[in-house]
Picture 1 (cartoon, rainbow, N blue to C red):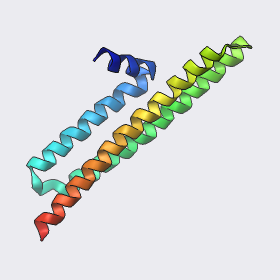
Picture 2 (cartoon, one colour; picture 1 turned 180 degrees about the vertical axis):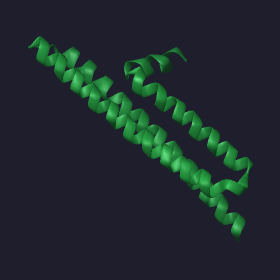
Picture 3 (cartoon, helix red, strand yellow; picture 1 turned 30 degrees about the horizontal axis):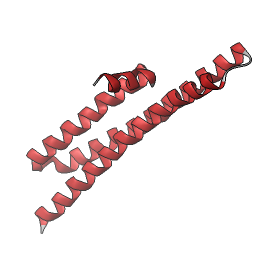
Picture 4 (cartoon, one colour; picture 1 turned 45 degrees about the horizontal axis):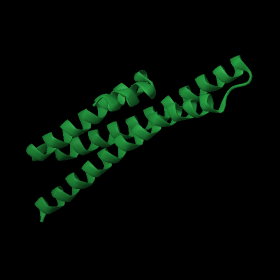
Length: 121
């Protein structure tokens, strides 16, 4: 569990923790949709919107991370390869987590649509 929070902090808490919250929200909405089948269309739309938002938020985090990294490189002049690789790792964590959350949302939507089709037949 400590490793997960370490990665969340490495990716930048401002971007990673909201994505974690949104991923938990997506899972809660999915479970609620499995229990209460009357609001499936609204839930599918909500999961889709939150998934896309998380995807975009991750890439926004990457953009800010790269800008900060280039500012640091500019301020220091010459920089070691380990600093560059550390900065790139940090810049890649936010879109990776956003993409992971987006894929969870899409998978849940597939399951909900599949269940909805079975009910209509």
